[in-house]
Image (cartoon, rainbow, N blue to C red; front, side, top):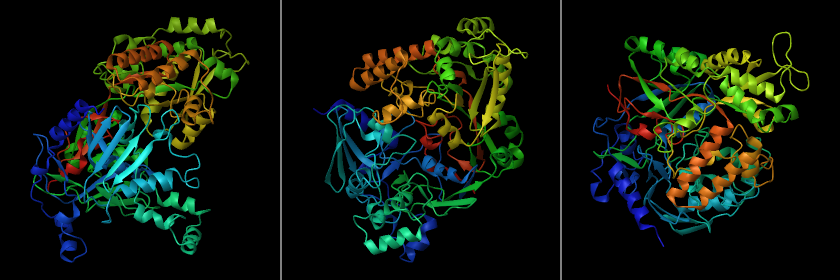
Length: 634
């Protein structure tokens, strides 16, 4: 039986937050930047480019109706960061609104039955950026010809589409209706397809078929493979089918802006999608801004370049320790420095690798006394005052005070400075011998030197690690920071070569009982404290290691129990137990949370909120606040 109440609430939130209704669709206005192409017959008029029922985006009371035009400049530290385009645009079948509720986007409406059956209704007349219809055939192509093609996807459909190993039943009911169903409940499905890290259930079939052996002329396909110097047609297909990376300008898109620059380059230009499905209340097709320009620069120079007015919107590669400098240069460079509160469970988190290959380190890191000692020997107050003007929250890696699940003990257990207890715990473990410099000796006679691997993308991590290193020296532990490229660090963690790393904490520090608690359990290799257990879950035992710690196994079982129940009270009990385990076990070592993220915004940039929540998922950095409605005053 359909959950009518759930659907009613879903639809109500959709209409209230987005201002959507067929009768409310205003008279359409042509975009000035596209008028010449329309007049020349190169583009159809706006009424023919939009779906029958476009998404009407209502502005907030403090916002202004925008005017189309202009270029938005931002700075990136590496060419791959053009992926940010997919985040800024934040276009999905379903998205989060500012209240973190699900609302339809590319889909016009969704029907949900017991979190098992999901029926998506697309917008009639919706088109890809090249004008080709966006239909259920694009979903069929992905499911049949990509996810279930052994040449392209040897491992089969992604784990995100599996429920206890069960693949969904996928039905293509008509041109605009698609249904996914499982025999068991799948409450993780909507959060995944609404997530910041895009997970697409569709592909532009009309474009990709030319690279697929099932559809392409064999001789032409062979020639294309040779021209691109690929090993096979599947490798060529994967290269051309990269919707997240924005590295193939020929690949049609549904996003607000589409990339026109082919790498390698240091300046990337994305232009408005003439078929984008959103409009404002005055009938103007969004986005307002014509072009988004990504200029590559050394990450160390990005704060200075932003402070010199070289970016109209900058939030990547700048941090709170740049705030004073940015504030001082506002008037001269013509921008504002906004401060948005972050929502991660911890802004700075140390991850002891419980799956480290080295047997001595593995045994030591799995000893809860050792993890407690490391946490108790961190002077969080000094770090807060030195680097964050005392404005941050000194805390474990846990939920924030604004979460309904918060309890003070989650924040403070084993997270207050206590050098005496830290030293006592290390002595209890047997780490009593020291070298001439006062560094404790491990069981193999080597000094207890912890190498913390970091992506080294900003100086803030280095500053925090330096202060922690001074703290740990007082308990006889030497800390070395080892910066490397992000991908290199991750691969070392995943393989068990790294013994400790640093990253941010829980992505969502403001969960409710109905938020999926997958981050608290070993469900993904990106859980940096237990990557091989996560691999084991993701591959259903084909790689990685089975969970062999009782507390971690309990977390996994609790996660499975949460997935199987729809009772909110039971879900809350599960969350509370999982948070308690994390506080007691210190699987990750949080330091501070709730810091402010500076956002540089040109004084000409209108409709960006003065205050907001800066978060990856949910939040898409600024994507939650609809950058397609940002506009540039003359």
